Every structure is written in structure tokens, then in C-alpha cells.
Length: 257
Length: 271
Image 1 (cartoon, each protein chain N blue to C red):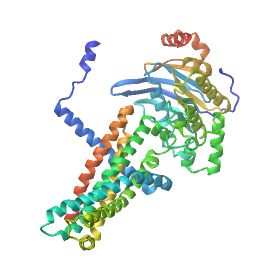
Image 2 (cartoon, rainbow over the protein chains, first blue to last red):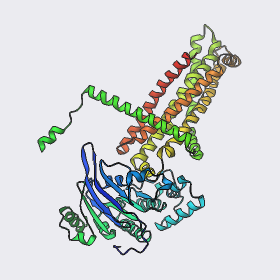
Image 3 (cartoon, rainbow over the protein chains, first blue to last red):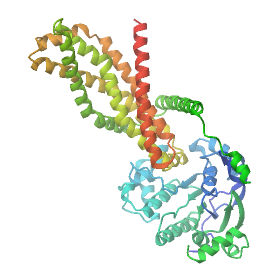
């Protein structure tokens, strides 16, 4: 793994966050987040538990509205983007949840092809072909008829990624994609995300507290501390950081924690 | 800093405060349920209905309720005859048929089946949607531009609303036959089964059955919308799912009885 030059035509979208604020019951979780993500970039956001990483992703995809600040994706303000009917959206955003969030009553193939089926713009044969292709991309051929309960944690995460890929998104958000996975599965998921970066060129934002993973796959790493981005740099620059939280993370990573 | 923090700790509310909070919470649930009802009706009216998903839900409702519904109905019909026969032994046993027929079609069939639907299928709906909420499956649908109301609530709403009137007819039929069994085998009852049914048919009119079916439509809506509301507002992991499920069943029972009173009162007022 490791950041390499982009090999595919760029088809991701840029993301711009300006002064993003969000509080719950008077407690400020996001305290003015400013962040720019370039089109096609793979950006990791690291930070301690409870610093608002997942909250940040929920704002970006529109599951929650910020109290203040702007989110601009692909040149469109988020509220404007969300108001566009699904069929007319100029680009697509997908999210991979920490729990994978597969629908338990649907098979793997039904989960992966869900959005395509609901949009009713593809024939059944097309949906089946897309499903097979993205399942092959995540190396899960032959699992089409299995239920999520029959899969391991790592397989469920990969199905969730396949479900995201099925809509061919320009922006993919990952919430702790390797949480609860062993180091080998973590590496596999990391390689998969890196491969998506090189083969598809989608912009990807990964929230994680796994700094070694972030350093191995990301173009840049943003450090979130108490609701603010305190540093955003390349993995090489991060290694030389004098930022206290970053130093703590690096020390913990060096100890293999 | 410490003093500030202590100053900000809210005082534990007293009995009046807790009552007020409970009332506000109830009003919020009812408001959310009304809003979800409107959204489900809109989705049923304007979006293409996914028949397959509705059928799946109807089958679920059926498998959850048919066998227990039959047991409940037959024994309630039998108990009605035993109780009424004891009271009427020295008066007029010929009204046994009308008593069972009217009680089953107008009141017991609808309420009993609605409780059964809320207790079995409704609790399953609340638990399933609660689990989907807690484990981000609902949010996953939203990020895929799939409306959870159209995808999850509407099929359950349509299935329960259509299934309950059918279940009520089923319960009425089994209940009156349960009464007939007791009439046939209880030596203390002098009435014949033919007389039991003949008198029942004289007294039970189509309008009585229709009132039961109207109740079925209304109760079916309640027994699906309230569990879905509680399921979608679930917070706090496994414990939250259990709490939401219990609350869904309890409030469904209460609202069914409230609407039962309103429908009965309305039907009498309308003559």
C-alpha cells in the first residue's frame, strides 16, 4: 500500500467545509471545522473517540444539518444538492457505515443492488451484472445469495463497500471501515480502498482512529481534536509533526497500540 | 470551573415536572405518529405500491396471528355462551345466538384481533425498525435516496390495514362456531344449534359486520403506525429497542380502545 500517483482520469468531486459547527444539548461537538478535499483525493480524518469524526461525516452526507457553516461538494452547496431529485443529481455520494448497515432481511445481492432496484432505471439483468461486478471488485464472488448474518465482520464491511460502489459514486465516505477487524482484515480493507482510489478516481474520506492505516493509504491526513481540524498534511509531513495530539497518536502507533 | 459545572447540573424534576415531561413526550409521540400516518397515506396514494413487499408483510401478519387468533376466538365464543347461558337459563336461551353474534362482530372480534395484531406483528415491527434505526440501516437507506417511509412503513401500514378486517371476519366466523359447539354439547342448554344460528341471523345485520370491519381498518392503521413510529424513534442500543417495543404495544392497546370508544359513540350518534 502507500500513496501513489493517480492512474485514472479524475472523476471525483471536491469537498469544501467552512466553519462547520454542531452541538448536542448545549455540548459543542464540531467547533468550526474548515477542510478542503481535492477531487479524487483520499483523505483520512483521525482523532480520538468522541471528537466528532462520525458527526462530521453525517453532516457531509446530509443526515444531519450543521448549526452553522457551509458544506460545498462539487461546487454545489449541500442543501441545494440534497434538494435535487435523485435522478437529476450531477454526482452521487455513498457512505459506508461503521456497522456496515446491511439490511438483515435482504441477501448480499439484494443489498448491493438495492438503490439501483429502487430507482427503477436499470433492468434486472443490468442490476445483476453490476452486482456481480462490484462483488468481484471486493473479492466476494459467490456470496450473492447469502444473508448478512452468514458473513463475517470483514465480509459485511466489503459488502457495504460493494453497495457503495454499485451506484458508481463520485464521493465515498467511510465511517471507521476497519473498526472491530483484525490486522489482516484491516489491511485487506485498506488495500481495497486504495484500489478504489486508483481504479475509479472517486474522492474518498475515511474517518478512523487507526493512524497506521491512514498513513498507509491516505493522500493526506487531517487530525480532528475537540471539534476542530488542528492539522492536515501528507503522511510524510505528519511524521514530523509537532502537534501534541498528532505526536500522541504517532507514539501510540509506534508502540503498536 | 468546578463551581460553574456544579451550577449547571440540572435539578432532578419533581412529580409535577415528571408529569409535565411525560405529557410532552406523549404529545411528541402522537405528533410523530400523525406525521408518519400522513406520510404513509401519501406514499400509498402517490408512489407505486410494491405489491411484493406488501404481500410479504401480509404473510407475516397472517403467520403471526392466524393460529393464536383461532384459539382466542373459539374459546371466547365458547365462554360467551357458557356465561350467557348461565344468566339466561331461567329467562330466554334463544338470545344466545344474537349475543355471541353481536358481541363477536361488533366488539370482541375487532378488539381481540387488533390486540393480537399489535401484540404479535406490531411488536415485531417496532423491534425490527428499532434495530434498523440503532444499527444505521435507516440512515443507510436515506443516504441511498430511499425513503424509509415508502420502503419500510408503507408496506407494513397497507398490509396491517388490509389484513385486520380479514382477520376480524375470520375471528367472527370461528367465534360464533365456538359458541355453537357449546350449544351442541352442553346438556344444560336446551337450545338447538339450528335455533342458535337462526336467531343470530335475525339479529345480526350487515351493518353490524361493517362496523366491525371499519374498526378493523382504523385499528389496523393504529397497530402499524404506532409500532413504526416507536421503531423509528428508537435510541440507545438493545435496551432502547426493548423499551420501544414495549411502549409500541402498550400505546397501541390504549389508542385502539380510545378509537373503539369514538367509533362506537360515533355510530350511535349517527343512528
